Image (cartoon, rainbow, N blue to C red; front, top):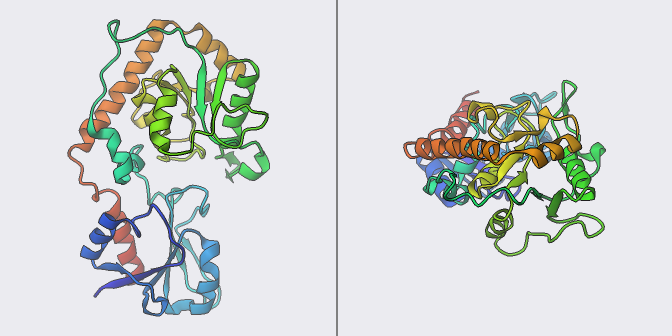
Length: 322
């Protein structure tokens, strides 16, 4: 029997709209429908969007929240129980552990990110390293400077890194230590928005002249590791990352990237960068390159659907059986 799914909103960049992923789902007995009346499962990217439909269709339908974006849905449980006759909503997001199971699920998830792993990187040595003359830190990010709106807590632990990243960038800019690229920054702080045209190619161009890149994730959670740290390494730019409260050290050794969670203040970070020796930079950068190359080798033998799409398939079939 074919399972039919109706998506409430477009849900771009998800398996439910991408051509290859849709074909894979179809081969597993799962198809999309534009007729909600024919749907077995109603799909959305957060609970709020599903709520009126859960009330309207109650237990006549099954319901699934699916998102790989940490701020689209912040539910921390796998099922949101419906009251009275309202149908239960099943959750698949980064907090339920259903989406990402390692630090490179996202960069391997679609064709765009898989470009990263086509070639390995050459280690740096005295012959191809041009020196550490540029100690300026670069950040490529949008402006976020309201802690009340960015805050995301679980059990009193702050998961938001947007506000912290912004504060470091602002402090560095005032001290002449950080160059800022990205949209929304006040007072002409940003050198350019960097978002027009081919964003990824432009980001590479921006990073190339720098040796240090402030590249926190926006949200701090297990295995939520996006392109940010991999972009930095690919451009031979030493990442300044936040490594506490996630699983990044499952892949990266200690003293590879610069871990901001080990610093007390932005000034401590800037002082550390200013006094870093070329040998330490080479050691750290090559540890990052080694990690990148290990992932490159590992992904050669991984079926693109095995760890990602099949989890979604299994969950959909479990929902239908419940």
